[in-house]
Length: 293
Image (cartoon, rainbow, N blue to C red; front, side, top):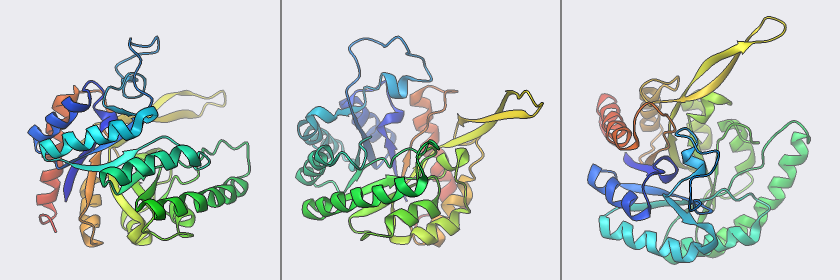
């Protein structure tokens, strides 16, 4: 296995600091958050829990992606890290913006970019959303083939592919050389859980890489009818509901030997300590399941 970090989960560090830190700790690669840069000052809604999204310095500026991607690649080369992905929040209908990221990926030799599927909010029929997304992805996949890159869609709660089966139904229309799936077992604690091995076998060559995080369900109240109300919250890798030991074992059983990219949104520890402990934990799981392929 190879170990990386999605930079969304290291918000206190800027781009160069992120690369240097991960290299010193012994990681193999970094998955870059690509979005608008953080504001000059902390926003009004800033909190320790929200800093990943509201004040994240480990971000490549999507408005200047060719410049920032080139700088990130140079830093990764300098510190001996792989550049796993340019991970955007763009949607399938934003073809012009996606093309700019594909061009930047090609220019730096990056294989992967992320595009987010549309949300499912129960207001528009799922089948209508799904069919429109297939049509939009046809355009993006043609672009990906031209630029020699791959567009990846993440299994994620709240969108139209919250499970491995739903993701496969969408991407199976296309060549896995140009479209893939980011398998995320932590998101599937929130929504879409399926047996890990089932999902890995089903997705097969469509698996781009694996996100590693964890979550638990927490009681938050009681309904007017007297029923308990529960919601999922992020948790440290060692403390959540996702069975990461089983996941690592199943990955090996299905022949996966690519990246585990940590996306830890838990708040019990500071970022530096999490980075150290998470790498130690994943290496421990690797040894417990027979060592690397």
